[in-house]
Amino acid sequence: MLDQDHSWRSTIVPDAGATSFENMSIAFVDPRADVATEPTAYELRLDTSNQVTIGLLANGFPDSVAFLDHVEAALADLLPNAGFRRYDKGDASSIASDQMLSTIAAECSAVVAAYGH
Image (cartoon, rainbow, N blue to C red; front, side, top):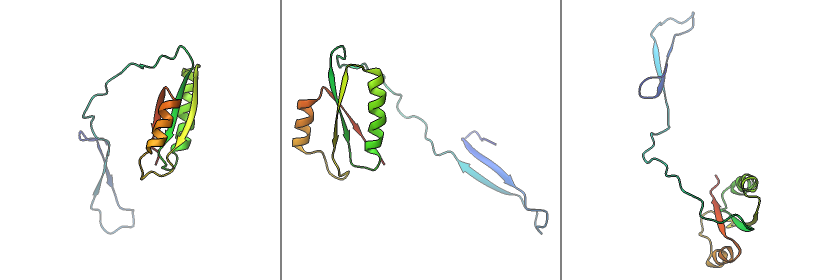
């Protein structure tokens, strides 16, 4: 049963051969928090009527590159004039170098940074 505090409660009754018939209660707590800040919609400020290049920056965590494969596919469907360039920090514990950021800024109109785990 779902309680008002969003936790699940269940009563367990011992097997028929058990010597005690005490009911035990187990609570399964929903770990999702209430939203503290409502999302704010924003408009895309990139003019996509002409060819644009979108950078896809993986942060070095496992699956960040694979995640960007899906991001690229979704964006390609929505933005037929978009081309894509891939970048990978390679090490999640370091920041993107000034050289990498300069390259991205020179080659791209926009960038998506992915955080995998």
